[in-house]
Length: 376
View (cartoon, rainbow, N blue to C red):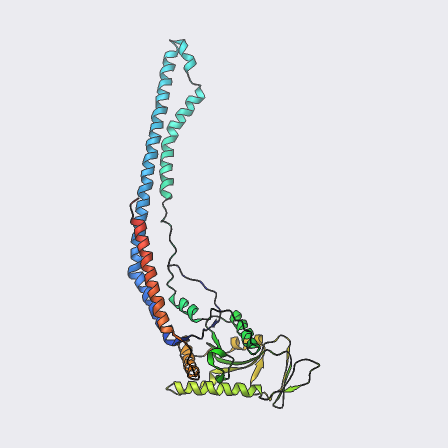
């Protein structure tokens, strides 16, 4: 079956989906089942139709070869008749001189003799060439068995990362940058997905852990000295002291995430070791002047990309586990809404994709069998 090839890139998940971990497991099981069914039964039906199509094509070409052979044999008979007639004229020419003008030149006679020798060989060559032209009938577009990839595309955001909200500019800029440079074993969500009460702008999950980020799209100098955070938007502007230190805001968000995960998992897990990240400053004209009093790491998107890439991969931190943790956070986030938003189950999505695949395969197999077994 034809497979879909996609460029590997970090996925940004759409906020409408829930039960992602169960949906991921379901779609992988259904894809495995579809591949097994294709190998055991469905593929055999198409292979049988394909074989019959080849036989029909061969029969058609054989009929064409027979017609060509009849034509060649007729030509051979005519040439032989001409040569026989010339031989009779040559034998009679000495006794009847008036017959000499009817004699063909010696070169023409030699050519006719050569043709009589050559045409049977050409007949064989023609048959060989015709048989070599037998090719499988043209394939129709085939249905992809890549259910898991289709599922990922469906749960990922289809809308372009754009925003008219200045407060979200940093989030969008950071997510765009990561999506261009991180592979598809990482995925991300942003604050509208997690609710502002979680105190996190961007959450990135991948084989190196959970990365929480507070983003700021600020121009100018950002200063942290002796635990005091200040900002200077331009050289002519006065220093502004921040009411809430940026590192404190991130630590609050981290504590909420850690507490939520601890409450959802039965066994005790050191989630503190899994949670990383810090402050991201996305404006190209930002200048960071932070001393050791900052309680969290800070940097630009390229610096954070390097940290994520260089971090050690966590043992047993599979995609299933990552999605299970994300589900726990999303359940908590949904509980914060006064009016629960409309959401869809990623498990039902997997079942729907599988049902669509079965119907596509059924139609595909019917087309193959009908087209290749139909009367010529």
